[in-house]
Structure formats: structure tokens, C-alpha cells
Length: 491
Ligand SMILES: C[S@@+](CC[C@H](N)C(=O)[O-])C[C@H]1O[C@@H](n2cnc3c(N)ncnc32)[C@H](O)[C@@H]1O
Image (cartoon, rainbow, N blue to C red; front, side, top):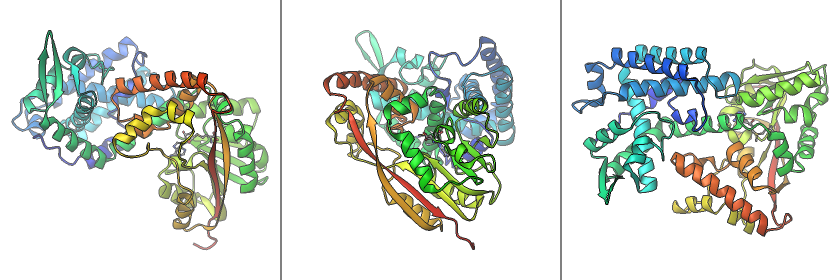
């Protein structure tokens, strides 16, 4: 069996170098690149592989195994292409790649190869694609060879044949081809199952799945253009509750406030945070989603508010100086963070005696019949693991414990209930599944075609459920929690 070395360090280095191997970011059926950018990346990838994929580097990755010829060039191309989309997203919130971004992505790949060797890039790429391939076979049981080679079910973004990968995986004994009638099918062997388990463990250890989920979540959210409208429809009382939270957190005129997870400025403007603080204070509002920030800045421009500044960043790594704020707060962000790290950061930037606060939805059990019926496929996926669906929501004790462990004082909470109205199937699926990334942990590990088919199915089921149940029956009460605490005055 091919043994994957521990690539945790290498993945960390890759991400620190501003690179990603996330070809799915390129999307399907959408043109992220003009033809000349494809050509540019193709040409430079060929050159890079030709120069750096030397006998020595091959030996480092593959030992005596036969080296697939085109795989090296494809590895460079896909790394550069997905890095380009990632960079475009970081800079603009959109995913469309310009020529200068493509050059920058390619420069980063070449720099990485110079610094860490081509073999390192190949190991990372092969681990990721091997997982993608074998995971799809395990999910579907078998894939018609033609569809497999074209990547139609699991890597539809590829613009080349996966024939060489099929050959390579057969030589390794991970897959086999089975002929039935006129057609051949690709199947996973027992050896392939073992390799898949090893690859999954290696990626898990390296934090790859977490990174992938986060990238998927943030990039999806950036593309969610009508967040406000959907939010109002689905959470009809959320705006009032945001205001109640700001009052409870005791935001005062003249304060210096850091807002976390600001999205498109719904708390900053519509819920009145900027207005409460007024021009004698200031608000720095932070979010990792560039697309949302662009929309927030448009609102700011229209509102002529000069004492608010939007910055790209996340709670775990705040782009602000020490003790600069009287308060750090936000709505619907805390459950999405690495909570201990986010609290360390908030404590760093809030002055002694200042306030840290959050309002976030809580975990709940979904018993409403319409809901079970609508989201049945998600419950089925979880049931196969003998679990409830994974989600990112918190138990009522989680945040208070986190706040106390972070050394905050006077921790206070209140739990309230929000009404959720499931009115239109398309809107609900767009808001939860494609927007805020709910059930993302269930959806992300699915091969592309299965994920898209599942989302389509949720839409279909939703339409049916909306006809069968009254609007009143399609409302549920969702618990949420507000929490506030003080940074100790000494230490
Ligand atoms: C459900 S939205 C809430 C937006 C808004 N505050 C509201 O009241 O509707 C969650 C927001 O948290 C942001 N987010 C995700 N991960 C984050 C992190 N690690 N740190 C800060 N914000 C994050 C998302 O980009 C998104 O804008």
C-alpha cells in the first residue's frame, strides 16, 4: 500500500504561502477564467513541471513506482488555478480571475516549489486528489469509466482526461475496472478502501477538511447577494432581536466598538449599532467575506457615516491593535469561530473593564414534522453514522464555559426564542444551504454530483412540503443565546 507521509507541516506551509489546492473553487458551468488566462496558466504550468519534476523529485514522491507524465503539470495548473480563484475572492469577494491575479497565483506556486521542492507540492496534490477520487467511488459504489475519466461525477471542473490517474490507481491496486455488457465501471478495491481511510486520516490530521469547509462556507457566503431580504423573510423578528441585544450589551454613544461577523452591515446600520455609537465614537466592523464587506461599504457610502470602518478579517486573528476598544460584539458569528482563540483575540483588543458579547443561535432538535420531511436526506446521511446531523451550533453551556475559561468576569446570559418562517423552498435552501452553510459538515464531504443532487432534492422536497403544510405549520421556534462579560481590570 502507498503510505502517505505525515503532511500536516506541509499543508500548514502551503496555506501560509497563500496557496490552496481546492480545485472545486473554480466552480462548474461558470467561467472563472477567460481563455487567455487558461492558456497562460497552462503554458506556465507545463514549464514549471518540465523544469522541476526531475528524477530526484519523482523518486522522493513515488520511489520505484511509474511516474504519471501529465499529472505534474496538472498538479501545478490546478494549484495555480484554485489559488487564483481564492485570491480573487480575497480581493474582491467575487471569484472571477483577472490576468494579474493569475500571474500572482503562478508566482506563489513557483516560489513554493523553489522553497519546498516539487515533491512536496506533488505529495499534497496527490493526497487531495486521491481522496477526492476514492471518496467518490466509495460514495457511488461504482462510476462508469467514461464519466470517471471526464470527472463528471466527482471532479467536473477538470478540463482534461483523468485516464492517466485511472491507470496509476490501477497499478497501485486502489481501483479496478469491471466490464458489464458494453460498458466498463470503475470500482474501489479493498486496498483502495484502506488507502482511502489512510488518506482521510492524513487529511484530517492536517486540518484539511476544516480548512476546506471554511473556504467553502466563506466563498459561498460571499456570493449570497440578497442576504438581507432572505434574512427578513426567514427570521421575521431578527431585526428587533438584534436591537434588543445591542441595548442589553449597553452600547453607548462615544464608545469604541469592534463588531465581529458584520456581513453586509445588517447590525452596523439596520439594527442601529453605528447610530448608537455616533460620531463621537467609532465602529470597526470585521468579516472574512469580502463580498459581504463590499455590500456593507456600499451601504456606508449611501448612509454618509464616517465613523465606521469595515475590515476583512476573522475573530481568531483580528486586524486591530491591543486594547483599542471598549467593546467587542457581534451577532451570529461566535459559533463559526475557533472559540478559545477568538476569545483570546477579543480579550487582547478590548481594554481592561471593557465588554465582550455575542448573540448566537443554539443547538436544537428538529422534531417538527414538516422539517423532518423536508430535510430527511440530511438525517439519513447522519443516521448512516448513527449520529444526529452535524452542525455548528452551540449548547447553552458552551459559550459561558468558553467565556469563563478565557478569564472573563461577570458572565451573564439570556436565552430567547426566534421564529423561523419557511415560506419558499428556493429561499430557504438558498439561505441555509448555499448561504449560511448550515449542514455544511454533512454536505462538504460528498462528491460534487452527490452534493448538487442533494441540494436539488432539498429544493424539490421543500416545494412539496410547502404545498402540504400550512404556513403556520412551517414556522419553528429557534432558541438563541445572548452572552456578555467583562475583561478583568487587572490582568
Ligand atoms: C450568519 S452571518 C451573521 C451576519 C450578521 N452579523 C447578522 O446579524 O445577520 C455570520 C457571519 O460571520 C462571518 N464569519 C464566519 N466565520 C467567521 C470568523 N471566523 N470570524 C468572524 N466572522 C466570521 C460570516 O462571513 C458571516 O458574515
